[in-house]
Image (cartoon, rainbow, N blue to C red; front, top):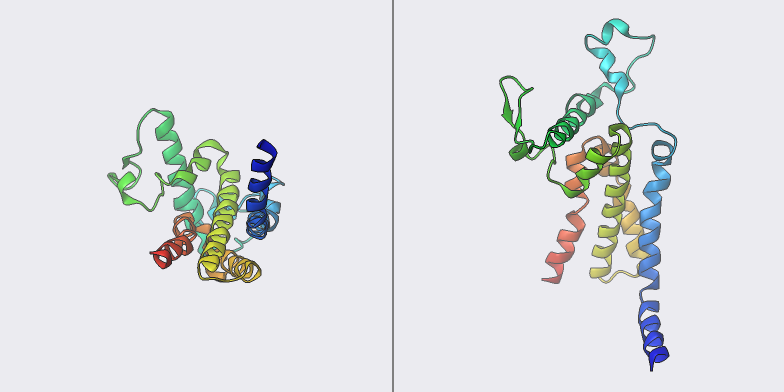
Length: 199
């Protein structure tokens, strides 16, 4: 009786083999794309942009920032993540940001993504590594959700895989990797559309 039950389970799983393979591919592609950041100790944080501002400007070597438009990542996003980490280590919730003028609401502002579950990476890993891992995981989620939307729309696995790859490496998501709150929200959009389609 037991071998028959196992056989039935394997037969049912065989039907999902193309879907599982596609999800593995969609999970591995961001790891490959961001491999230089994830596995060699590099970071997505544009620390060279700090040379535009004092006190670092006085210490500036003979280099220019690669892209001055990315300064938000080191001036805001990384600082927010460090603020959450420091506040949690003190046993408090990061409800308030005392470093902005005379203070401002922090947790309720939302842009810091303090309560987003995958933001835990920023509180566990070194901040330089966390940005790379967060981005790779978010792009894997984006691809998987776009694949799921394709399957809900009755695309064959190969076509849904192409749609997943196209979304996870779309110009919008790749340009937005420096804005963690954008990719954190955008990666779930295809899943929301899939749910709407099923309702």
